[in-house]
Image (cartoon, rainbow, N blue to C red; front, top):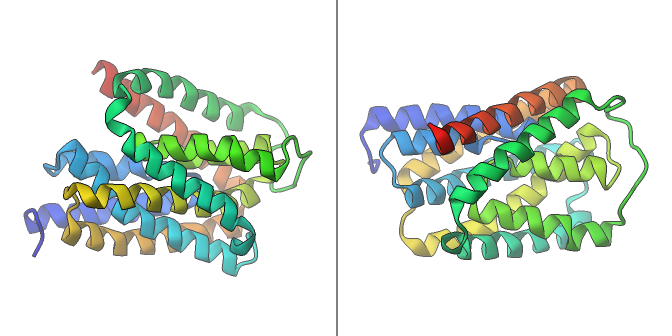
Length: 253
């Protein structure tokens, strides 16, 4: 049935549920699912391809949940999502050209900066703030950069989109979380379209993990909408710090 032993597949399904829950609130679900796939015996390409498959379902579920609650209008984000999908596909195509060793050294520093910003910045709440960048400029600068990064590397994409919406677009924390999910879904979908042709995707395992992602993302989104910044902010700090430590361990451990 599965490409791997059943007990390993069940552990991956559990990991996907946890990843979907965390990712729907603060991003960083790939920090759980990708290492789990590697530990289950997947090659790096198989892990990335399978993670994109299951992660796409989780991001889509979170997008629908936030949209139904009125925190985001998907039709208003369609053009940004198109940019994100194209950039995600381009990032996946360029994956073999970018020295991942360099990224592994740079990204922990960036993620620690994200964690410090959300931990120490006063006044971060669900309230809107001053807009520093027009939506059109945001769509052609921040969105393609972050989405391309998602295509060729991945960890922290949701956190980076969140920080962009808060710092540049002037969104409150909950609104930023809601708007992040559709762009993350689009970048996942774009990079998945490239990885599908690699033949490296574990389809049976990936689809089973996708079902667990949907369940985790549904629960996480509901909890985030109920509690708001009081939950999102500390979880974002924790996941950004965790991703930074994980990447440092990979680089030097």
